[in-house]
Each structure stands twice: as C-alpha cells, then as structure tokens.
Image: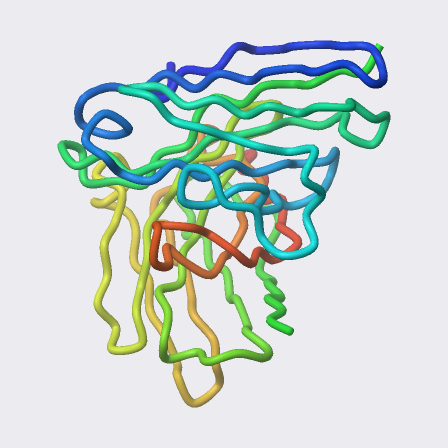
Length: 111
Length: 118
C-alpha cells in the first residue's frame, strides 16, 4: 500500500468534471513538500501534468488544475475528453522516509 | 529539447545483476539530478534512487543494499546496477531527469521492461 493514497479509479462522461484525490500524512504533503501530478497513457512513460502543487507546464491545457490542503492534494479535470483516459499519479517527498513518493495511481475512465 | 534514451538487458535470471544505461540529449547535464523509477506490471511507480553530476547518490532505503548508480559526465550518461535480482524486480524501468526544484521529474525516457525469470 502506497504512503500516498489514491482511489483506484474514477470515471465521468465527456464534458464532466472529475477529481482525483491524493491523501498523505504529516511527513510528506502535510509537511509542505510540493505535490506533482503525472499522466501515464498505456504503454508510455509518465508525463508531468502539474508541478509545485498547482502549476501547469507550458502547453498543458487549463482543463487540468490541482490544489493541496493539509495532508491531501487533488487533481481536477474539467471538460473531460476521451484522450484524458489514462492513469494519474501524485508524487511528493517524505521527510521521514527520505524518499520521493508516488501514489498508487488512479485510472480515469471516460464513459 | 531534452531527451532521454535508455537501454539494457531485458531478461535476467534470479541472482543476476540488472544493468541499465540512460543517455541524455539536450539541456544541461551537470545542472540536474538524475533518477531511476520502476513500475511492476500493472502496478504503480517506485523511485529507486538519484545521482548528481559529481556522483553523489541517494537511494530508496528499500533497495539501498542492492542498488548502485554511477555517472559519466563526458558522455552525458548515467547507469543503474541492481544486484541479486528476483522475480519481484520484474518491472518497467524508467530513467528521468530530477528531482528538480519542486522535486519534479520533468523528462522521462521511454522505459524498458526487465523480466527476471529462471
């Protein structure tokens, strides 16, 4: 079980809004370490989606947004599109374990 | 544009040593940390360790006893050795740039499946 906990799956119809949660603890997200989000399409490498809690790399659509609060973080996809169907991972650093951590991943399905 | 390309043996027997190479094209090789991340089939991502241009390393404690990372700045390459592999080490292995400021992994190689089987 991952130290950063994500739901195994979420789904939504095209055009809808979906939220992917990432729950950590006081030694990682709660300690103020930044949360980053990655999108992984089948058979591909992870792709940086959000960095430093709520920042999008240049060229990424603004349909993707994220936030943090306390020991948790959330990724929101608005206006869901078919090409958004992928696995999404949160990532942070744990000061107690001394490791970069990834969440277990969430499969976003477009109905 | 930064690109990473990796290669290495894809099939190992138990107790052998996994060896992978990652070559970096573009960008400043010496200005960053470089990492290895793995993903068992159907599972999530696990950070293995990182190395900087001076050879300074930081490994995941869960793998530290078996991991060695090294770097060749003259070739813009870095390397992973994982000793005494078992079936549990079967995974897609990725090399990546980072963690950068904000602890981001911003560029990734394509990944390579390494299977451990007798």
